Picture 1: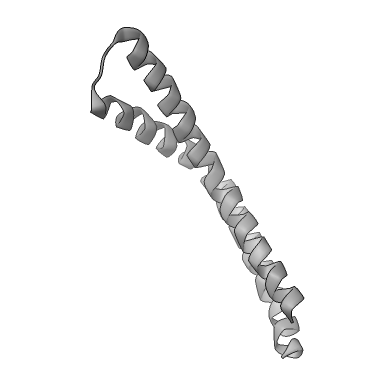
Picture 2 (picture 1 turned 120 degrees about the horizontal axis):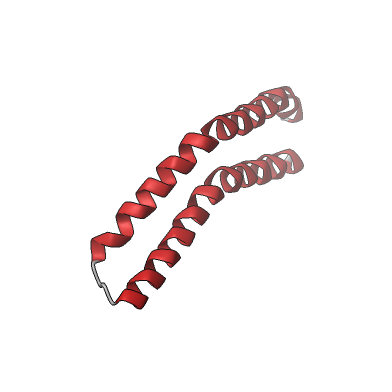
Length: 90
């Protein structure tokens, strides 16, 4: 029983990372590029960092959303297939 629960938690954690890491990475990369640009040009506008991050994340989501949905649905189907094992282990 504990092995099944640990496996489920591992898969949920990996699923969360798979879906969230691409968006977080693009936000970090764009933020770093804007910070370098601000340092080089000495423009210290605080709102300048938010707009490129939001635009980059939205564009990335438009392209990656079908992949994210397929990964999510595949994992949910695997979880649903494990329900009889969970019920039988109790």
